[in-house]
Image (tube, rainbow, N blue to C red; front, side, top):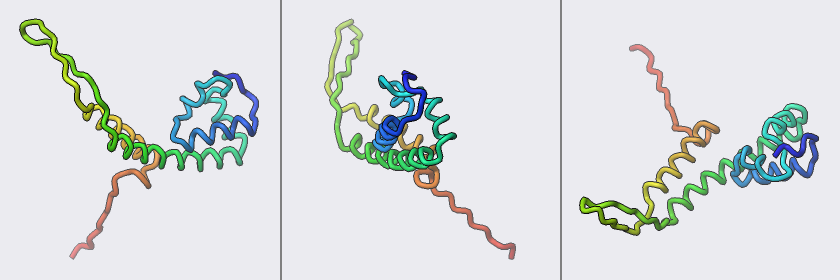
Length: 132
């Protein structure tokens, strides 16, 4: 982490490619050979072109995260639930981890609503009626 402190087009391209896939910046920056996330923000401040490419990649990445919600919803995940009975014996049951999938989807959608409220937030409609 934090290996690159000097801006390079190659590294900035890798960052933007991964952002466009919906990978969070901090996760990208944990990869070997990638700069610290603070360094990336310094690059954004210092380089207008990178800042614009970063913003476009992040927008595309938001769409990728939204699309991943459909994949999560459409793909059952088998899990094993183990419970202890009153007599001390163990019982296991295999079933879809529906609650876990709902949490994954809900978390992604809530983050998208915060990160890009115009596109992913709840629509708020204000109706102003004149006094009559």
